[in-house]
Amino acid sequence: MDDHVTSRRDGSALFLTLNNVAKANSVSANMLHSLQVAFESADQDDEITAVVLTGNGKFFCTGMDFSSDGDANAELSPELHDQKYHKAVRLFDTISSCTKTTIALVNGSCYGGGNGIVFACDIRIAVRGAKFVLSEVKRGLSPATISRYLVREWGTSLAREAMVTGRVVGIEELFPLRAVHHAVEDIVEGQKRVVEVLEGLKSCAPRAVAQSKRLVNAVYEENSRESGQVIKEVFLDMTKPSDEADYGISQFRKGVRTVDWESWYKSRTIPKL
Image 1 (cartoon, rainbow, N blue to C red):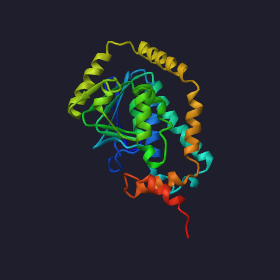
Image 2 (cartoon, rainbow, N blue to C red):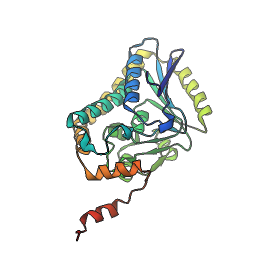
Image 3 (cartoon, helix red, strand yellow):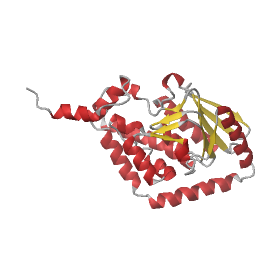
Image 4 (tube, rainbow, N blue to C red):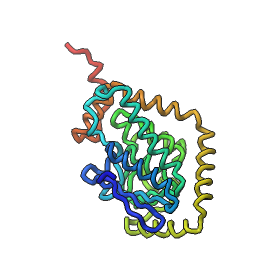
C-alpha cells in the first residue's frame, strides 16, 4: 500500500487514513490506486464488516493532485484522459457499492474530488468547522466524476448551487439534510462516535446490510440511469485542450485562490494594437 494511505485492523473494522499531509491529502495516482485495492480487498474479506476512512492532519482531502499533470491539458492524450476518468469513477463506485458499511470520519475540510470520497460512503461523521467546497469551477473545471454522489446526498438544489458558485458549504447546512449524520466538536469525539457506530453495527447482519445498500443504489440508479453517459461526456469535454482550464490550474499552482475570471475574459477580447 502507498505510504500516503495507512491501514489497520481493529476487530471486524478496517481503518484507512489518508496520510499525504505535505500535500493536504490531495489524491495522487498512487493514493487512488491504494484506496481502490484496499476497498476491493475489504469487499472480499468475510471477516471485515466495516471500513472507516479518515484523514491525517488539517484536511480530510483537497481533491486530485494536479502536480503530476502537465501545465496544459493538451499534454495528455484522449486515451490517458479516458483512463483518468475510469480510475476516478471506479474508486467512487467501489466505495459506494462496497458490501461493507463505509464510514467517513471527516477530520477537516474537504475540497473537489475529496467530496466524492466522503459522500460515496454510507455514514458520515464530521468535525464542526469542516468545510465542503466544490472548488472546480474556480479553476475552470467541473466536478464531473463526483456529481452523482453530491446530487444523491445533498439534493439537487444545494448541489447545483454549490457546483456553480464554488462556495463554502458548512456542517450547519449538511447536518439538517442528513448528508452529514453526526456533527462532533473535534476528532477525539469523532473517534468515540465511530466506536459507537461500529458497536451498533454488530447487531446488523452483514448480508442484510449488503442487500440493503444494493437496494438503495438500485432505486437511485433507476432514476438516473442516463446520467453515466452525461458525466463521462462532461469529464472528457473538460479535459480537452482549454485555455480556461490551463489558466485556472496555472493560477492555482501559483497560489492564487481567487481568480478574476471576468478580467481574464475581457483581456482576451480586447483587440491588440
